[in-house]
Length: 164
Image (tube, rainbow, N blue to C red; front, side):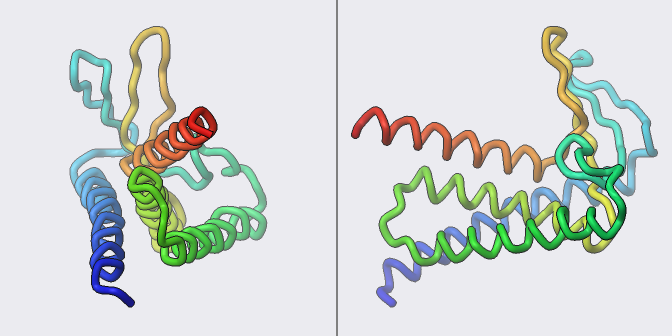
């Protein structure tokens, strides 16, 4: 393996670790310092901290599924998707930098949430945005990382179609 490729892979791995670390640090602080369903208003109420445990996927999707199906869909399937993502990132030498960054965001966020599901049986969510005309569900840093990655990849896919 060429030194420049090795260095690139190390940087990508460190960026993934940064994503996972930031997510896990934020969740650890929330688990320790905030009570369940406690609301702490930040930024004039537009951003609220509130701790909830999510046994489902994004926005609690799937939390009502039978446990065996939920474990399969929310643990095993994401692990396979993450494995494919790592394989893709590792084997594709010519990916544009934004796509690499988007993939790292997806992988880091995915690892952060799957780690919680395996270790705790749920994911700690704690951020809520309410802008009046739009309001989010409660989410976490891993979700933010995943959505950032998806946004970057979508923008890149549109950019490639326009250029082509």
